[in-house]
Length: 241
Image 1 (spheres, rainbow, N blue to C red):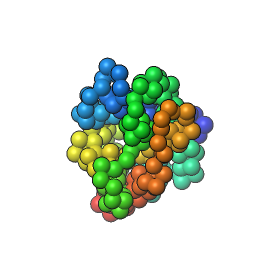
Image 2 (cartoon, helix red, strand yellow):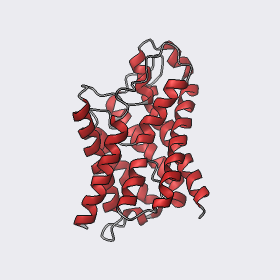
Image 3 (cartoon, rainbow, N blue to C red):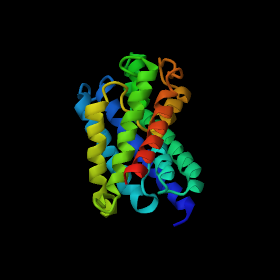
Image 4 (cartoon, rainbow, N blue to C red):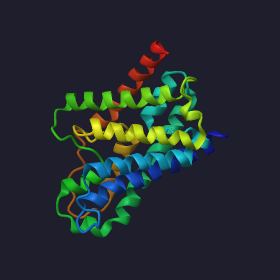
């Protein structure tokens, strides 16, 4: 499998992840949507299934990282080539950007009908429920620590979940849902720079009617928190396993 092919599937998988993930947020929060008011449970389920679809698409070809934090964590743990880290991250970011643009085009009429700028921003990226940047950083780091650690545990010979072919997507889906339902209330559980930074860039450049600023003062948290959490997770895995 060539690196170009792997990156292409990382791009497509991340595109689908954001299309469905940001899509469920748009569906449940934008005015005049049939899904308006669906609530947190629908959002967490939607994000879980979004990850599942991305894993089904990219898994056989790229390993379906779909997340720079996962890519970095696997490299730190010695389970992924360092030479492929940057190409994977570029592909993931591009896929996230394109997915966010697609959500905007799909829900353009509903963005126009929605007056609240914070709601529009919330479709694209996360903002904390209570802004306390260093605690928010801790929340993102811990949630991503759990994500990466459990993913690596899935791949051990005692579990071999990620070696189950397509069936390996289901435990990861459940993991994403569990993180969202248990740890998502503080920051919105970005746990993925490609899920947060790339759509935030899309929000900044798209002609969204009545939009606010893109929250750049907070934007480092859902990028640095997941990356730090992933590295700590990889080191913990190496020590324990």
